[in-house]
Length: 370
Image (cartoon, rainbow, N blue to C red; front, side, top):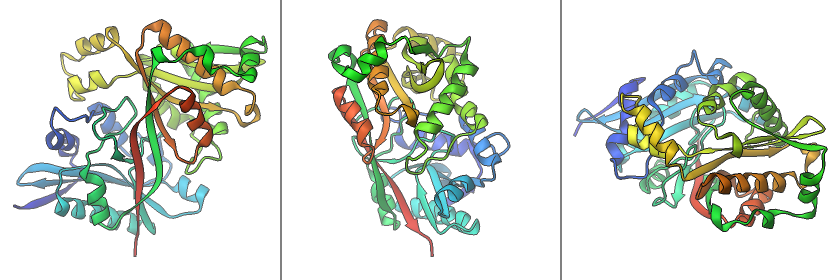
């Protein structure tokens, strides 16, 4: 059967996982319009900053069977001292020939940009979804989590890629967590002191709150592996969408004497809406969105970060206690937590206190380029 590789064919690229995985898989598409702008070098600030991007689709007898992106990120190379090319949005049937062909094209693309290795999956946003699922394939993802099928790790390894940077996503039962049980002496002081206040992230103050969130994220994550501080344009490019889906009671900026000190962003899970619409904004999309909002049972913690000067004061525990209390009050039943690296001992201790169970195990994959 003939294999065709198309470059920058958006329609076949978007259609690939829907065609390959089928409607009963845990896969959740992103909105078609969002993917189009992410892949547009003139709109995505990650690329405007000097990165190069292309994307490929493999078709067998005219039917899409695999896809991936290839891009460079010069800011990351300069900050971390490497020459890394990245692949992302790798979705495929169990078709080794197609995987080999796509990865070969990606390798050639980044090699031409001076890269000495290719790594992924990094999906192309300011706050990237990353990883290939290696365990937990049976579990449906929450918003901002990836899902990939069991054969992808095998295909990557057959193409010469090795696993690195292990991480996990998590889920906890909201009703099973007693908010007060998360408290410790230092977090109790935070919650009791008038020096500490919590400002909800709402539409009215969205721009101000998100600039404060960016400052907390950049400071708190500065020493994390692979992190590159986000520009205001990069942060708004993706996070700006949250204005329309936020539940203000479950997201907040923590302030110490009116200065931003920490952020926790928890949002309703939009996966039911995305699955129902197939990622397309058709005539029925508003109805599906209303149903998702009215029947919301799941939320997801997208990120939480504390400025380094405020570490050790109990602020993380205080923020989590407030969020869990709000989740219970608002009637959410389950809450996801996006990826945490195995090396992040502090965050792993926090999810352990929540009684969270691992949802997915993920790894990055890399290959040296000759």
